[in-house]
Amino acid sequence: MSTVLEEVETGDERSAAVAPERRSWLARTTRLRRAGGLSDEDDLVAAGLVDDVDLLAPFNPAILAIRWGTTAVSVALSVPFFIDADWTVVAWCGVIMALTIVRTARPLEYNGDTRSLVAVLGEVAIPVLAVASTGYWDSPFVFSLVTATIVAGFSRGFGFGLRVAGASALAVAIPDLASDGSSEAIRTSAQWVVVMLMVALVAGYARRISGEADRQHSVALDRLGRLADANALLFSLHRVTQTLPASFDLDEVLDTTVTRLRGLFDYDAAVILLLDDTDSSMWLVARRDGTRLPERIPTAQLPPPLLEVVTTQSMVAQGNLLREGGPGLVPSTSSGLYTPLRARGAMVGLLSIEHGDAHHFSARDVELLNGFVEPAALAIDNARWFSRLRTVGADEERTRIARDLHDRIGQSLAYLAFELDRIVTADTKGDAVGPSLEQLRGDVRGVIREVRDTLYDLRTDVSESQDMADTIEAYAKRVAERSSLEVRLFADRGARLPILQEREMWRIAQEALTNVERHARASKVRVVWRCNGTSAALEVLDDGIGFPEGRAGRLDSYGIVGMRERASSIGARLELVSAQGKGTRVRCLLQGG
Image 1 (cartoon, helix red, strand yellow):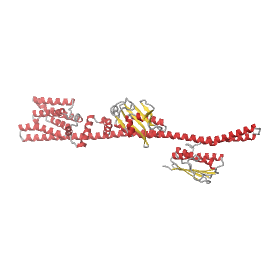
Image 2 (cartoon, rainbow, N blue to C red):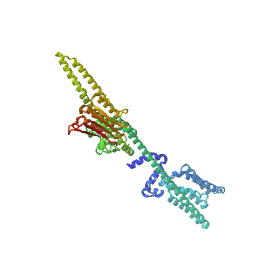
Image 3 (cartoon, rainbow, N blue to C red):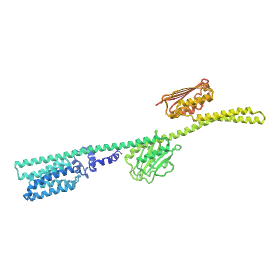
Image 4 (cartoon, helix red, strand yellow):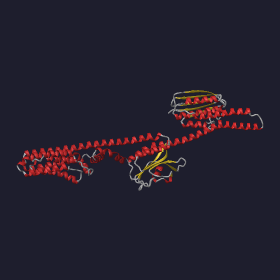
């Protein structure tokens, strides 16, 4: 996978800055040198690694300048021979000039095959023949050998350049020395042999320096390309992590997930399946894009790639569904990526993206999807849990409201009904009902007051503008007004908890005060609220009848079930201490992280 990813990642960035043939040569040169330590381009040619790359292309400007320079010198040195009508020199001057013009219009290429090697050797043979035919080292075309040697050194490096330079020098020196063995001829031949070898060394060294510079440049571009691609990947995943958990609404999270998928991947169909809470053998089609599916799919009817995901709980990549893994969720697609959605150590769903083309998804898509699914799965799981908690909270609130209506208003209405029946009976007997009606009118007013207080209590809650201390204080005043309780409040003001935690602590305080008012038969109650912004402590202490021994904190006593559940939902600890005849203390402690 990493090899494929390297090829995908480095393609676009490097092609813009390095010629394709140089990039290919440099890549293969680097791999072979790292593996086996090849030292020169002629070794690469021998290894067959540069069979279709023009190795002379980067040096064409330099070769052209040298070629025209040596040709101009050759023409200048040939002028006297033109005057003397030496037709051999004139003919070879025309050949050298024609070769220069041809190579200007169509530069020599060398890619390591036999044909290009013959062309390079022909490039060497022509000036050698010209020099040997027109006076050896005294020939006006002797400088054209420099061009041939440089071409050889640039094409295959040190070894080939030195061999060509030596062979060219010997091809001229041996016949020259055979015709004139004087010390002057020997000195001239030696000088030119050294010059030719030095030219070959310079050309080979320039070849190596250029190759190393291009290789370093290519490596730098390769690293920059990888960093740019990694940066783009991290930026995309950062946007995912910022966007997906932004809402606790499941529909909104699913819509956002599909939107982000569409922005990150090129696909023809995408499906999000969620495990059914009520039946673990069924999968709910939560979202689909580009296909039509039933609302529920049994596990046994999942396509083979998704069944493999369910079994292995890991990503499955299918390059050719028609040959390898069987059909996907959409029968017309040919490739797909399938991954589990895991959150909190459990698989909560499946994600499938498919395309109509075989082998459409690259290794980069695999890595990108691996980074995408974790925050997506967590966001989806958070939204599902929030939905469950919201349902549980709504049920709990309905239960509490029903209990309040039953305990306060229901009993009062039942009492009014009994009183009306008694008054009607008394009236039929001729008894006086005036005083009873007057009493009943007062009782109705009391019920109306209870209804008003109950509704007000149900609406009372902490908010961004009203903190815990103000909310408890307002509620305690109403309790004191409608009962004989003396309520004393000791509360910290200013520091606040997160709103969700503060609301649960308030509901615990409200439940504790309601229990004191209705069941404790207390005369005094003390409420303490301490908060530093991260930790908090709530205490409600009364002097009532308390619990019988052995029943303090019993789970079904006076709404303690709800208080414990609320405390647990925010990570708090609820303590309840009571003794018969000695009152009750309810304490809720929340430790900051």
